[in-house]
Each structure stands twice: as structure tokens, then as C-alpha cells.
Amino acid sequence: MKRRFDYTILLLFAFTIFLTSCVSAQEKQFTEKEFKEIQAQATEKLQSKTYRLTKTEENFSDREVNPRSVKISILEIVPPNKKREVEELKSPTKNTKEERIWDGKNLYVRENDNDWKKYNGGGSGSGGDFVSGRITTIYKFVEKTNLNNKTANVYEVEMNRKAVKYNQTSRFEVQYVERTKYWISEDGYFLKTVKESEIIGSKSLLRDTWIYEYDPNIKIEAPIMKSELKQTPE
Image (cartoon, rainbow, N blue to C red; front, side, top):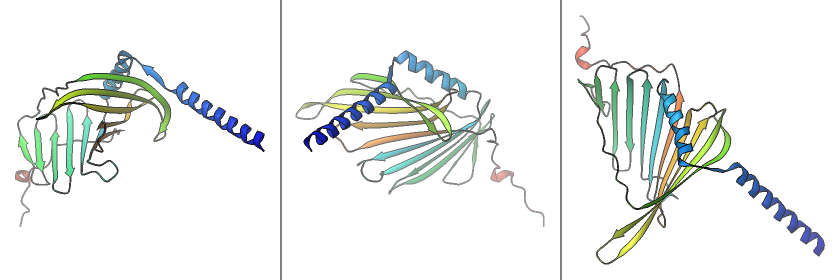
């Protein structure tokens, strides 16, 4: 009986080693340059594509319960120069919606389904975010998988940042972790991206999810303005 028990333990141990080796064989670390090249090629392919990008931003004060706010942003692109954006924010205290259409000539904006307003131009820039602290980043290939009937390569970028903070009485270190997974099709197109940002020791979590849809039937036209509506003849 004891010999059978020992044999069972040995088999379980061998199977665990086998699974671990399989995972290790799939995962492969990349250099930053190698990953940036893959990312740049996928970004370049977007330039000539008609597509819809849906981004969902979830803000959790406690990741074990529902998010305290959800922001959904939809971006539609029709080359060479047409763009439509819709942003909706939903929270217990605030619900807003903003839409923007750029038809190649003019910018149209409306808020909360009110009347459209026309501008002669549009667009804004950003100086970017300043990030301080010691940063280490790991790039790796995770696996080959199937996503929506498409074969995809999954890559992960993990950034660890340690920053020194101060309060009135002490100096302390805070560790931030940001993990981003990319699903890229075998022919080099973005399919999905998920980024999770957390502070070690905190239950809070920020999760951003991007879903790409390549649809040649997307159309973007200038909206009908209220002032352009014709009166119905009597």
C-alpha cells in the first residue's frame, strides 16, 4: 500500500514538472527593440484600415467588487481623414456622453444627445505624462491562442516602478505594477489589448481594454444640423 502511495506521488510530481516545462517552453522573453518592432508594424497596418476601436476603462477601488466607474470610448476611423468618437462615462454620481465627428473638413460636437455644434477646426495635443521613480520593464511572448476564430500571438509587457513618497512625518516607497497584454494576429494586426495598473498592497485596480474591429462597411458623414432641417410645407 505504501509503495502504491509513493508511486502516485511520484507520478503527480512528474506531471507537475511536465506542465511547468510546457509553460516555460511557450513563454519567451523579448528585448525592448524586438517588441517595439512588432508593435510598430501593427500600428503601421492601421494607417490604411477602416476600423472600430472600443476602449473600456474600469476603475476599481476594490477589485473584488464592481468598478466604481466605467468609461467607454469608441473610435471609428475611415482613411484617409475621417474620424468619429463617442465617450460615455458611467458612475454612481455622474453619467455623461460626448460625440465628435471629423468629416475631413469640419469638426462636429454634441454632448448628452443634444444638438450638434459645428467648428471650423479641431484637435488638441498633450505634453504627455511625467513618470518618476526606478523603472524595470520585461517583454515576453506568452502563447499562441485563438481569439474570435483568429490565431493570435499573445505578448505581455510588465513594468515595475518604485517611487519615493513623503508625508508630514516620514519617507516611504511605493511600488507600481503595470501589465499589458497584446493579442496580435498572425498577419500582424492588433486584435485586443488589456492593461492592468495596480499599487502593491492596495486593492485598487485600473483596467483598460481595447477591442479592434476591422469593418470596411463603416461610414462617417457630417451630421444633419438643426439649422439645416427643412420646414415641412403646409
